[in-house]
Image 1 (cartoon, rainbow, N blue to C red):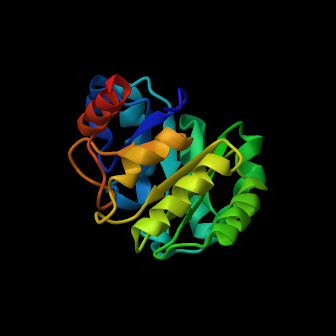
Image 2 (cartoon, one colour):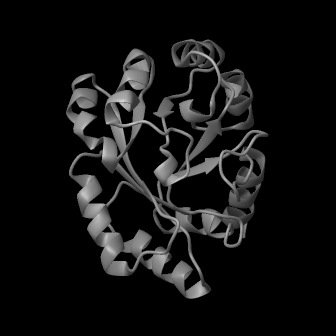
Amino acid sequence: MSEYMKIVAALTDPADASRAQDLGADIIELRFDLMEGDPLECVRICRQASVLPVIGTIRSAHEGGQFFGDAAAWYEILEPVLPFVDYVDVEQRFASWAPRIKEGGKAIIASYHSGDMLSLPDLFTHERDLRKYGDIVKIIVTPDSEEDILELIAFTHAAKKPLCTGVMGAKFRYARAILPLFGSLLVYCHTGTKTAEGQYSVQEFISLMTLLKNG
């Protein structure tokens, strides 16, 4: 198992940051596209409740989220919270803002979420494209078969790091626990409210990793 794997608690309520920290999460993701209220106030609540690093994410509807605006509208929401986050999740459609985000000293998680499985050549192509502007590459796909899982594992093992890979949906949710064993840096979990189908809770994932390490 990778010694560098980190558990990300993906939150829709910033008040859950304290619980995420107590449960053993390493990083908090604030899903601003799923939160009600002022994003700036949300991140302030999170910072008061936890000392963990924070990822700011505004996931587009194109990639499974609830943000329906363009790149300008995306950055308009993000800009006020930039001083209070450590990482920013940036989809390729918003990559024009990457230089501005880096100027602010923030690390970028360059992400791509697909409702389909990608071939190995396409996985490596996306990794190279995302690496051009991101510090960490995140590629999430939707497998159709066990053969797809094997290809995703092979890609995760072989691709340049740091890298995060994962799956959409519940059918192959076990891949969420397997991919960190082959080099995926981040695993996204919940603290009670899932931000994606198939997520493990922070407690469940820690138990799984404990069993695997002690096996």
